[in-house]
Structure formats: C-alpha cells, structure tokens
Image (cartoon, rainbow, N blue to C red):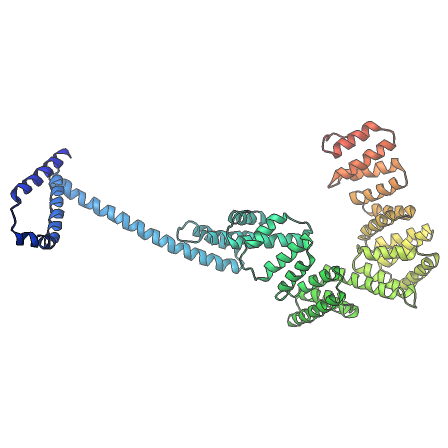
Length: 526
C-alpha cells in the first residue's frame, strides 16, 4: 500500500513539470476563464482515468497474478448475486406479509380464529406491515377463542394508560370495561377507563357511546349517561330500556313514557323482521312488561317457550305474574284470584324472591287472609293444579296456621313432585328468619325440609345454623356451622360465627382459634 502511494505522488510531480505555467498575454488572461471552463470535463475524465489506472497498477503489481484476478471475478459476481437475492427476498417477504395479514383478517371474520392466528404470526415476521394493526387483529382472534387474558394483555401492550397508544386498542379496552360493568355491576378504575374512552377511535360508534353511558352511570351523572345511551340506541334499540330506567331514576315519568313508546315501536319492528330470534322476542316482551301490557307479554313469552326451553322467558313470566298479583290483590275478588298468580310465578321461577316475599307477607297479614289463602290453595289443587309449587305453598300456609302435620305432608308431596324445591324451602326459610318479627319455628321447618333433601349442602346448613343462632340454641348452631364449613367456598364468615358461638358456649380458646382462622392467621382448627 505504501509503494502504491509513493508511485502516485511521483506521477503527479512529473505531470506538473511537463506543463509549466507560461506567461499569458492580456487576451490570454481574458480568455483563461473560458478555456478553463471548456477544459473542465476533460480534466475530470482525465482525473478519473488516472485514479483508475493507479488502482489497476496496484492490482496488477507483481504480487497479484492474472489467476488471482480471474478467480476474483466469480467472487464479485457471487457477492452481487447474494445482494440481489437478499433484496428480492425482502421484497417477497414484505409482499407475503401483506398477503398473510389480508388472509388472516378474512379468516377471522369467517370465525376461523386458529387459522387466522397462524397467518397473523407469519405477517408479524415481515417489515413492510402495520404491526399495530396485526397485533390488534391477533388480540381479537384470542378474544374470539375465549382467551380474554391473552387478548387483554395484547391490547394493553398497544394502549397503555397515560400514553396515547393505538386508538383501536383504546376503544376495545373501553368497551371491555363497559361490558364488565354491565355483567358484574362492579366499577373499574374510572381514571383508566376515561383514558381509554378519550383516546379511542370511532368516536361516533354506538358501542363507544354505550361505553360512555356506562362510564357516566358509574360516575353518578345520570343526565350524561342517558344522553350517551340515547345516541347508542339509534343503532341498538334495546338501549331505550336503559334510557327509560335512568329517566325513572330522575323522576321524569313523562320522558319514561315517551321513551318506552319509542322502544316498543322499534323493538316490535325488529321482532317482526326476525320472530325466530330469541333475543328480539325477549326484548320486545320486556318492553311490553314495562309498559304494563301484561297479557301481550305473557302471550309472547309462552309462544317462545312452546318453541324452546328458555330460562330468561321463565324469569320474565314470573315477573309478569307477580305484577298481575300486585294489580289484582286490592280488587273486589280479594286474595282468592290474585293468589293464583303467585303460585304460577313460582312455577316458572322457583327462586323468584318477589313472589316468595309476597307469599309470606299476604299470608301473615291477618288470620282471615291466612285462612283465605289456604282455602284458595286447596281449591287450586282440587281443580287439577296439583303442582309441586302448589303443595309447597299450601304446606307453608299450614305451618303458619299451626298445622304442623299437614304442613309436613304437603312439603313432602312438593319435594316428591320436584326435588329442586329444596332451594325454594331454603330461600323461604332465610327470608322468614330475617324478618323484623320472624316466625323462627316456621323458618326452621322449611330449613329442615331443604336439608332432608340435600344433607351436605353448605348453604342449607348455613341457613339452619343461622336460625338456631337466632333461637339461641348455640349447641345445634355450632354443629350446623361446622358441617357447613367443610364445603364452604368462603369459610371466613362461618368461622366468625363459630367464634361468637363458642364464646357463648364458654370456650374462649376455641373461639380465639376460629377468629384467627377467619383473619387468615391460623389454618389449624380443632
């Protein structure tokens, strides 16, 4: 390398000596700039040629043979081929990534989530792709497969709180929080929720307006909540029922009537277009129920039950018949006709507490009402309505009237006809025991009926233990509570009760042990 540099300098010196500066005349000096400009391209080419010759001299020196040069040509060609192939590969990879992405989106829309995931992962390996869009779609595929945790984690990676991330992911997380509130009735972190709502895209969409409605509802701003739900109800008519509920809470009954009228028209139109859709039928029947058109709601729901067994239809029918009971119970016919509605309501939903509560309240309101209720139930059974619930109701009434043997007879008949009535007995026992002036004997009889059917049910044992405790029968209460503790999902409340019971039984050490266990400080129990 040093020899090449020395020869390069020697050649430049020789060229300067071969072209000495001659004195120019005045005209020469005037034309010198023009000549210089005209000769500039030639000088540039000459410089390039000299540099090229110098490099060729270096490679053709004695130490570089023609064989080396010939061998170097394929290497140079190979290197060029590698560069070209790499470039073409990158182009193909980018093109394939776009194809994987487009195909993955199509498969996801068709419900083929697992196939979509494979293509979306391949798309992420390319460079010429919107990675946020691909990750967002991948998260949606996990959601479609029911993997909410993985879907949520991907969404949160795209849309962190306190950072303006991918708007579609912010929208997804805002809507997800709203859905959780609708199902669980538990409020999430309002600050985080607001951040996602305010950074979401599709700001005019019905889903986002609905999410704003739930956000304001949780925050206590009923007017803004109702306004947001109104915007969403344009595309989702069922939300008019939510608007009506908010207007009722704001005591604007005129607005409630107007909103329900809108809901009825739109939901009836929706039901007429697709009468086989269960959701449409249920929403339309609910609107009729709220508007007080109970016979129409009853007919619609019974027609639905004739087509399919649906628990939501049964629950709404129970509510319809309780509303009928409320409307008829003050009429001239007295309790005889209206009492039938409670029995029918409990036939549709054995655990419908408004019906159970009214059964107790009406029957205990006066001796005359109790006698009338018992007579009504006997006639119903004699007329062919000898359902499990009819016997259960009559057994409850007989016990209230002091007819223990008749009560047990009807209770046993009820449970024989429908073993599931044990849960009704348990719930009714609990409600009776929690009254201000409870009939603990009647409540204990019902609790016994439930436990006779399911001796190891923790909930039933818990109920009977509570009744024994109210009767101050601490020994029996401790037995039921300790049995209930074995299968309890949340043992702490039972352990606290046992601590109080053992204090009353004069065993403070055991009481302290149960108290520590309830606080999570001691897992060893006697």
